[in-house]
Length: 76
Image 1 (cartoon, rainbow, N blue to C red):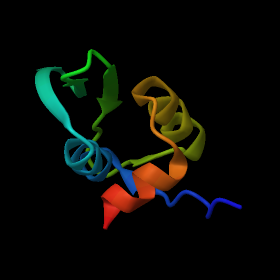
Image 2 (image 1 turned 90 degrees about the horizontal axis):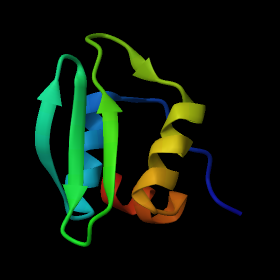
Image 3 (image 1 turned 60 degrees about the horizontal axis):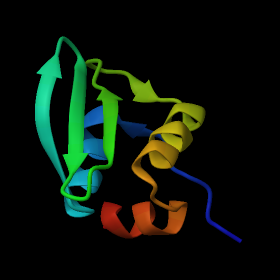
């Protein structure tokens, strides 16, 4: 059973994705685009003072093709 995903800010998600091998390639407004060297790409919204909903976080993980366990390891 996977542990429940925590409530996170956009910059915390970006930091974890960078640990997973993604790099920030551009930012347009409050949306940051990250790419992995194998071609995977994902967009993370970074709104000041706002948390990401768990549903949106799951969508980001699907786009990044990361399991919840892999992502949680990158949060540490």
